[in-house]
Amino acid sequence: MSEIVDKPDVKTFDLGEHLAGRGYPEQEVSIFLDETIGFAIAEADRKLQTLSGLGKTEEYDALEAKQQVLFDSLAERRLIVTVRGVPRKVKRDIYAKVQSEFPGKKDAFGREEFPIEASELTDQLLWTAHIVKVTSPDGTSVTPSPDEVQQLRDLAPMADLKSIQTGIEKVDNAGEGFEIASRSVDFLSKP
Image (tube, rainbow, N blue to C red; front, side, top):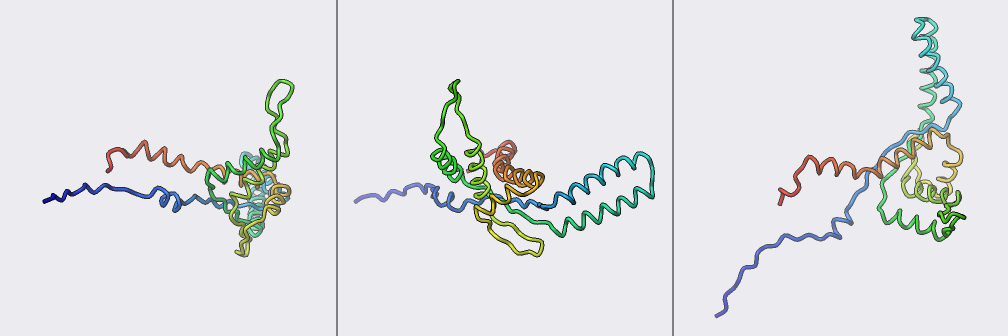
């Protein structure tokens, strides 16, 4: 007679299933595409700082009211760019595509040269991968095409471009949260 042996219940999981269900963080970035109003707001702010030290209340109040009108006008033009983190594979594929189009060359000192066109293509492809939608002031949204992303990069004010780049960097660095969590949670003590 053979004896039935109970095998221990080993906990297993499907790594592929966990990776397939992985989510990526999103960040909404406000842009305004109006350098004239942005400049006027900055000028008013500089004058307000000067006036606040001089104590000129009437002039200060009038300028502050004018600046508020500019804020309101700018808010009516606000676009919201939603950026999302992307998998490492997407970035690796982008770098491979750029490298295939712009094979490495060495300068006279043996240093790798990276043409400006390669840098621009890299940025354009990364932005296209990260930008998931642009929402207009009336609430309509569009997923921008690569050509529209390039137009945005070519024509938007530098302040707006910096805001979008900062948003992309934030979603790219979302893993910092895991580093913080690992310092505060003892993962090894959990089964």
